[in-house]
Image 1 (cartoon, rainbow, N blue to C red):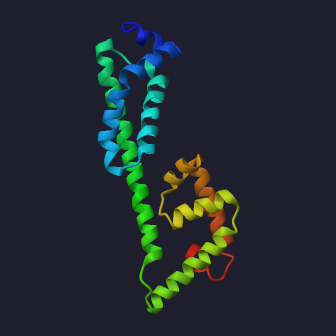
Image 2: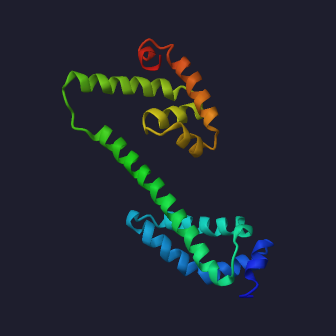
Image 3: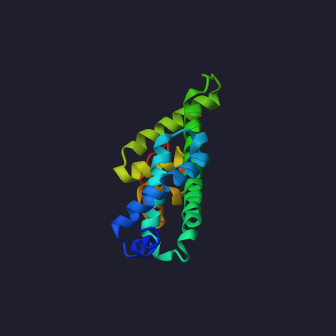
Length: 184
């Protein structure tokens, strides 16, 4: 099997995938752990390992080389997949920390802080009245500071759909006198 596994993998034979998992799982886990270990989420490491084998399965026909080159190929896929996961998790951790900081700031009697909090509460109230995908889009955009592309990826929408929903939602929200300044 060892010398034929690439041909069988390219033909989408499950026994070839099983062989690859048995043969390369420790190697893939080691690379993934070295990159994602500092984040400390075992579930992310496991998910990344699964995604590596899925990508190998889906892109087997792209592999060009000898069986000896396969270890380098799967190692490269693992490295870049783990880096992508690291970036995503790092951004998520930063957003969560900012969101927590936003709500855990010490109470300040300054008028500006109170006005900003009232404005946020007002916006949250109106956003929560939008339909579910629009509500999620506005929350991600204005409270998690996600880009339209990131929102589209997260919600499995096109960027154009996100742009359109934001445009229409802003028009709805601008009907409120208190939010009109923010969205026009």
